[in-house]
Length: 309
Image (tube, rainbow, N blue to C red):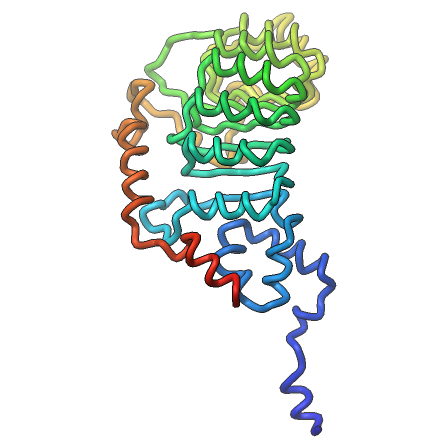
């Protein structure tokens, strides 16, 4: 065989990488790209993508342009969860998600240690509370613009005794002067082992903050950005300075915050989002999208068919 022929038939360099290195590279793509693109590239990648260990961490990050998304994200997520075969320990769901999806995850993923929900308007406080009952090992719960109340926080704390990191981030509207310490008190009374706490845009006052400091002695990092009812001065400021390794103050920069941190001038009810649509409108429209979108490329049938490639 000629050298030119041998060269032409040589495998691409990326196919010669050790399996573990290829797996690490592929994992950075996220679940959507893995299931819809990467696993169909070649038999070697398909084999890696079928390995349950690839799905111990599932990242369903997306741009939020659901109307432009050519895939049914709910089905993609369920398929990824099935691939984990019960080994899932970390999942991130952004701009979609329902109580039903959380319930599906909770039925087979009792080893879950980290859950992040971003702009997940189809997930209610009640749905989240029911799901975390099945996550007794949960150590991190991060909620970005996913609404829960103090009762849900209380239930979550009681169901997840190992919780060490908690995020409950909201928006601040300039015309909303209401101060409320109920969420802060629920955290103080039910999450005593926290080491990391982020309450971006919370309405709590110094009283709520003091309760957290008194009841969460292991706190190392505390993010109070846009918590404008908190006034750090005197003894409470001294406590924070002495105890908190990484403290973000109410007026600190939000330049490194990964989501929208704009402060809005108009007053908006709890049921309305800045687009003018209520949460129920968004959920209803999204349900219609899931049912009627032509984006069934990632339906179970599609994925099962392409598993044979």
